[in-house]
Image 1 (cartoon, rainbow, N blue to C red):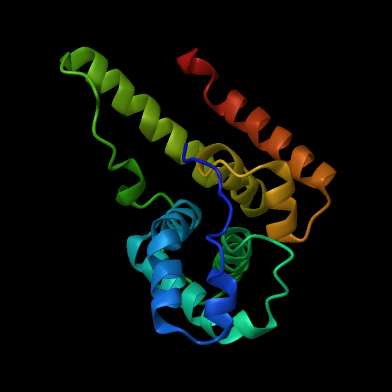
Image 2: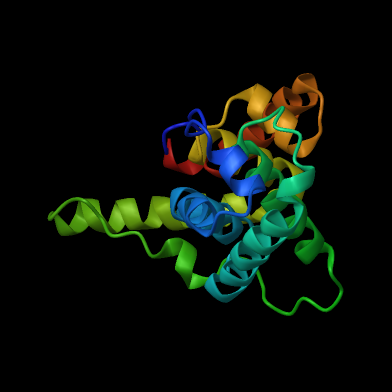
Length: 184
């Protein structure tokens, strides 16, 4: 899990609104990996995740003047990324299937072959189970458990009530628990 989105650097929003190129570069550097990670976990395809990440920053660049600053910049970017991912998943033109090999590309941390194989099997099952979740539940699970956002930050990013976030997260975890019971 990543560290939660921290406070915005002082003055970054003002510099972004002033159109300072270095400020936008700082924003991209600070959040590109997080935005890409959310897109990859949601879409399961590196190519699609790269497209979505680029689109997030293009939209942010064009809309920064309208950003009210009530949320953190990171939360705002997660909201943009989430909506773009959900739109892509709902698109009838989408041909890529979930469960791309990119999700299972996690090296084992042990040298013992049996333990490494068991861990790889569990990780593959976990990625497959997450990919099978309904989009809204998967998104909340990714933002909370993998990206480390608070319930409030998720609610803000997705324009949901915090109770809805908690409910979706609970249901997602229960579904994962059912799917992974054989590994217990």
